[in-house]
Amino acid sequence: MSLRITPLTDPAHGPHERRLAWLASDADAIPVGSAFLRLFTGAGQKHLAELTLQVHPVERRKHVGSQLLDAAVAAARDDARRSVVAQTEAGSPGDHFLAARGFRKVLTLRYSRLSLADVDACALVATIERPHPGYRLVSWRGTVPDHLAQTFAASRRAMDDMPMDDTDYGTVVWDVDRVRAAAKAVEQRGDQLHTVVAIDTSDDSIAGFTELVVPGDGTGDAQHYGTGVLPEHRGHGLGTWMKAESIRQAHTHYPHLGGLLADTADSNTHMRHINDSFGYTPTHTTHEHQLDL
Image (cartoon, rainbow, N blue to C red; front, side, top):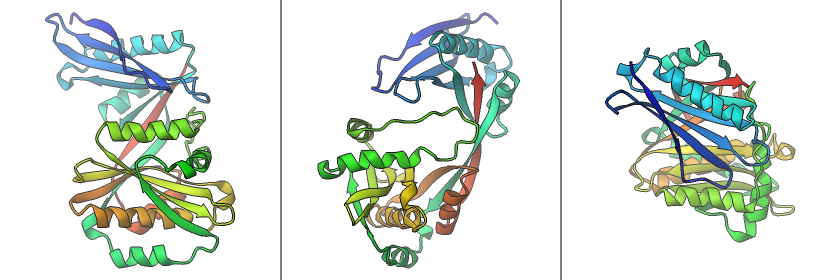
């Protein structure tokens, strides 16, 4: 098969990443596959690249994926990256392809869904109204309010020790500009970001947070983003409390929303237990693969 690999550059650079791309086409200039390489540029992750590679099913086993992978890995090496990660569904052709090309499985992610039609609203309210001395819940839609921006950015370190198993993930460094930019990105694509936080009443600092992104038209399924509690505030049930309020808001304010989606590291038994307690049911499993350069 005559194959041409055309390098491309994604013009939409973000403040903490840039992307390279390659298009594979046959002798008739018909696209048969593509690869995208996300190069993280933020402090704490400059060693890392993330690969997304797709080959049309009819064109598999014709070395299309291998040539795209070779181009992406070479670019990662040229950019002095230490690791390349890629995610595939467990048992898929991509799962086997990456393993055969020297990637090792470093993380298993469990995906689950909560059907809002099956939510026990009374049980949610009971969970939310359970006393949590020294804490109160606050929520907002979109960008964090100015008076909470600094403490919200500081609370993001709650995710620094989330279970990532053997993934060379590094650390995401957050500041006020970054949390505002993240909210703006959700808004610009037409979705709605909802955040619930637990506030320490002794100093009005944020002790933990949970985020949910709802489709702009309020239909389909919403996606949970980060949920974290600062180490010094763990052990008080804040994660369950915040997530219960997030679910209640989705259930109350979006009557046409179908469900809520979550992905959790298999080794994150605490968060998996929280999701199970609310009735999230498994949908599929993916593997994070890593190539050490």
